[in-house]
Length: 232
Image (tube, rainbow, N blue to C red; front, top):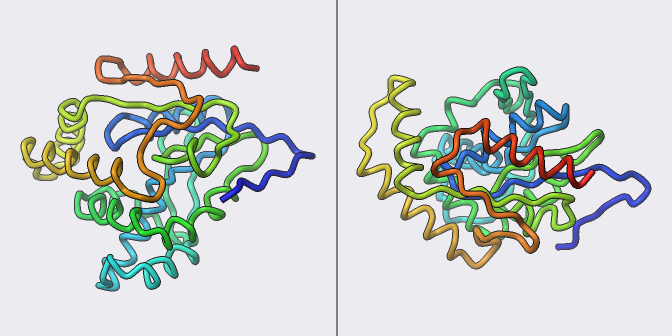
């Protein structure tokens, strides 16, 4: 899995990896918006694969069927530079709310553990790298997909804090939620992501560790942008 790079065109990449609920999605979108760069939510790609598989009632353990979905994903991310929100379009249809359910999140973690699915999505993710730059959010952006990224961040937060954030998010959307159950699901998902044999959730070589447990989003964004501008 060697990253293919056209050496004649230098397109910078900032990778922001970390577990679900660490704030990496919001942080990545805000940074992409402020820099005027493209944005890749790799976690959404796996959720989209899971969404399609669930709708087709497929067995999530059958890698050949799931990887076929992954290889044909027609997806686009549109970032609002003002607020950092991103619209996720699957075949031209907005599916942002659909892929944020706990069922979809849990299913995405399962399909992400399938080597055939990760292989199918590898080049699809790298294709998002285009001028003027890319902010890539995920779990293995810096370690596998963009190992030569100019800046790698590993954003983390305690499981308890991430459960609280998810609980608040669901409540604000008028959805039912149980804090204890959310914490248990996060801990199970973390264990699965960190212990899988292919592309486990670990800080990439050279990644800067950032703990967002006690930080506001604006603080995290400002800190990462400061690190970027120091490099450039």
